[in-house]
Length: 331
Image (cartoon, rainbow, N blue to C red; front, side, top):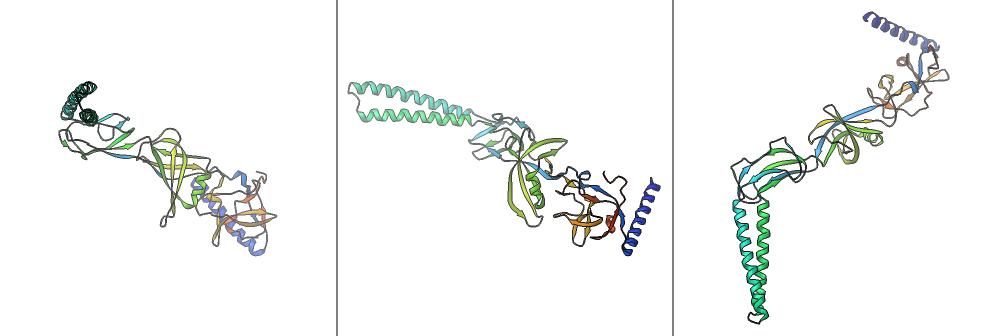
């Protein structure tokens, strides 16, 4: 293997020396070429990305009560409506029962007043007061039912528990933080893409998120028009098309360019421009490629039969006479 590599290096050096000598003599330089169609490849590009939840809730207590039970742990995935925290509900339950008793009394007094009003033994004012008392008793019941419902803190959406702030046995008051929950349904992939790649992503035939060996199909939702002046990048946000990764999952945004690309190994630099040498009527013509960067593949939309010079390209100048010595020029 080492001997073959050494022989190849010697051969290339010999070709370079021959090229320079032929250039000096004004004679045609031997080169090989291939059709552009045989060099182009489907390009898969990537950029760093992560899954971001659109909803992070800090759940808090809404009444004075002791914390009886917290049946979930950090990292647990829960469904909407699942019980996350149970509070001591005895005081709230007693208040509800008292309100129910008062409503029964108010209802009895209202009915009695209505009966007496028909025989004109009760004034209109007293009847109205009894009606008001009954309505207030009904509102008190609704208020106390609401307090009883707050004894059980449930998940407002499908999510994952990311932090616990309280412990069982502690006394909670309205506003006491209990735990933090991340939405696992309303999530997006957020990627940081170079400015030069934004158009590629928008035109890409396929886009997906890769993380932990899994692949998730994506749909571009938005290009955030806030350019980072240092990194010269732009934030892109994507919706999952089918299955979803969990919030916080790091990975890579990947996309297949809509247009095939020419691998970077065939590019050469002449002055300040990157491009390739094209075989054209016995001469080498340097063709710059807009946006080409050293070490990166570049999209090319030339005719597929365009002949790209391969061997001998590094020593060429624009307009040099060349002799295509490709074994099978049609390939």
